[in-house]
Amino acid sequence: MILLARLDDAKAARQQKPLISFNGATLRLGGKTIIENLDLTVRPGEFLCIVGASGCGKTTALRLAAGLYRPTGGAVTFDGQAMLEPRREVAIVFQDYGKALLPWRTAAGNISLALEASRIPARERPGRIAELLRKVGLPAHAEKYPAEMSGGMQQRLQIARCLAQEPTTLLMDEPFGALDAMTRQGLQDEVLSLTAATNTTVIFVTHDLDEAIYLGDRVVGLLPHPGRIGIELDVNLSRPRDQLATREHPEFLRLRRQLFDFIKATEH
Amino acid sequence: MSATAMIWRMASFAVAAGFVGLWQLIANLKLVSPVFLPGPDRAWTALVRGFASGDLASKLVGTLEHMAYGWLAASIAGIALGALIGSSRLMRTYIAPSLEFLRPLPVSAIIPVAIALFGLTEGMALFVIAFGAIWPIMLATIHGFAAVEPRLYEVARALQMSRPAVVFKIALPSALPDILAGMRLSLTVALILSVVCEVLAGLDGLGHWVLLSARAFRSADLFAGVILLGAMGYVTSVAMSLAERRLLAWQSMR
Image (cartoon, rainbow over all chains, first blue to last red):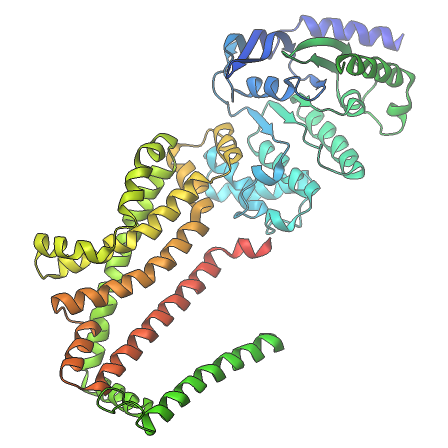
């Protein structure tokens, strides 16, 4: 019964106006077609995960959604408007946190960068910075430089800087790919609770299938050369998710098997 | 300061003292005629006498001014031009070959040109010093701006930062270690060219003092001037490293 109700919810949600949509989006770079004829919509508040073998264009799809690339064919729209340049309500969390942070600014200074860009008056910044650092679990590290922080802490800091933009949409490019398993699980749960609290729309690119199912409302698998959609799965697992119970749920295992078979088939 | 650092510091002083002792010994034994080589004692006396009469102090200020103005002009122009060239791939492609032609040009070769243009004036000195000192700064700035992590520009785009904000908050701080290294190299160039200009154009400064002393066979005064020039080079370089350490405190965290 509960499952059926959730399916109805999902159906109703699908009829909602999409926030981000790829309409036949194609990207050619240097004579190579990276993404071809991609049709994909993301609903407001949805957590969409994109998986695929390496080189399938999942990062490229994310960069199209971010406005860092312009499609050479078709269109990518955000809230009905063509996404030709990055927008402040769309924040990007890069995989290489070490390169995305300013090494000459402290943790507080790095968050301040986003507040300065949003023209937040100087006297309001310290309060906002303290609040954001608390949110991502770094309240005691305001005066540390990125080089003094662990990988997990640096990625937390980058997330805090993105949240400082007060985004409605968070685009995450394999954000936990370089972190160890324990740190990764902790951050997964933190991202889920942070985005649920503000009903943030998320596109999350990962090569970790378990992570995709654990986090997502929906998982899209891309086929490589050129990148296009190969599989689309709705994840009907109750929220809040739990690192043990969710991962042991039969539905989780079924999806995992399905996704695993898909990826294996694409690698030939 | 740690114990080992202390010992090394003392050892370096001992070496310096050894050289002064050797110099004194050579002078005392008259291995070189005292007309040409005064001992450190006589040089020191000349130094004290020069300062007491106020002559040497005004020469020192003169050289400091030449060096400082030339170096500052070179820094401002070098950083501005370097930033402009370094931040654009197109500019780098077009301008780099011309720079490679101008850079190895010995600055002494342009002194006659500068004299023809400006005469034996302070303006000529400023031009020559700035022209010589601009290269290390400009080339370091070009390199620093070209080497900014591309990811940071994407962060700036995602945050929709304005063009000036990108330059002052991302490119400039990122290039700062390179720029400061260039400025440190130029400091030496500026000092050398200050002396050369003073000698050639008879401008007020230690270079002129040294030249006149040599012509009058006042070797003690000559050495006093040389010692002062050495001290100037040393002090400015130490000041520069202190400034670098302060500005680049974040780098020591790595």
